[in-house]
Length: 201
Image (cartoon, helix red, strand yellow):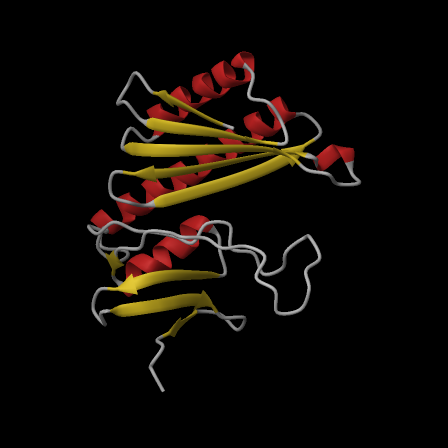
């Protein structure tokens, strides 16, 4: 189920999705209030997505899952997820976590102005959502159990590394503007990053 709302501050587009639960008016109003507070931390947020899921797990203390994804006007993507035994508690926790990520991102922007790291991104970014190394559900060998289509736009290798760090992922798929091809940047176990540049055989 999908619900959309707009922030009074900058008409931020927010989509709310419920998985195995109903998005009640009370729940929707609670999220809207939280998102407006979040908007004050990062006024350049252009769109946000809130996913609320009730999982069928053995542990009742972790069934209520709240995930928030925001994208600012520069295309930078931030995502946070929290789970608990109460959906409102999960929402509170994920909003706090997202606020910390936003502050971290803003801190990096300040560092860039001081010349500490690469220049601020100017190209839009895209990210493969919900990529998982293993699916929780069992699947037959060689069976494709999920397909995702996503928009991808040019960026530099430095911007891809920054996006990987902001998302907290082990790898990130991007279009390398300098090489004019799809690349993958990944975190190496021994430290540092690796770059995959495919070639036709």
